[in-house]
Length: 234
Image 1 (cartoon, rainbow, N blue to C red):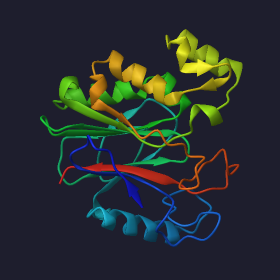
Image 2: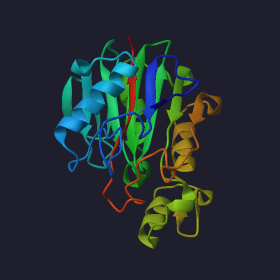
Image 3: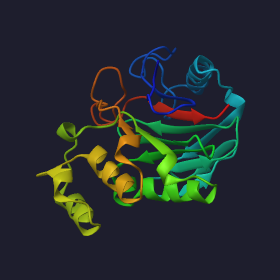
Image 4: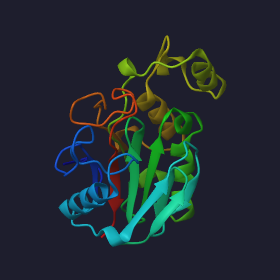
């Protein structure tokens, strides 16, 4: 049900598609989207959060808009693509189905963050804006651990020439893509290292959402479920 990162020493997880109640094509642990029933989605959310010892009443989530907007987390839904907090008990959740989830934790300063990094968020440096918002809450890049979860891998992520051009114009190195295929993990690592995250403090899952354990918007041509990445200080 949940995959975890070895460097994030608080409650967190990246969900798979297994362990819920939804029927095909949303089988089984669908945590979002609009085509599955609301009852199934809510039940799946309760099941998934309970597995981590978390309460859905403390959920902070997002209406994600592929931006680089960061919110100070509060219970309920906000609009944007990242959440940060220095408060214990809140559950920060990011919804994913090909875009990469990035979790942040500064154990020294007790600040967490969660970001949704599709190509638009990545090219507009959502990782940087998230860390800057964490710094405002007291975080230090030198003691911040980062985990990049599952997402669409380079082999399965072909884009148009205009997308490659945008990455070029915004200073990303040419080894972030091969012809028309972009490596979003490498792009986000580039941003994280530029803003002061130590390379050894960045963990990457290195798994592709095209694998059967995950939902994939591209693979399933839009008719698919959603996974979550969550983080919480208890």
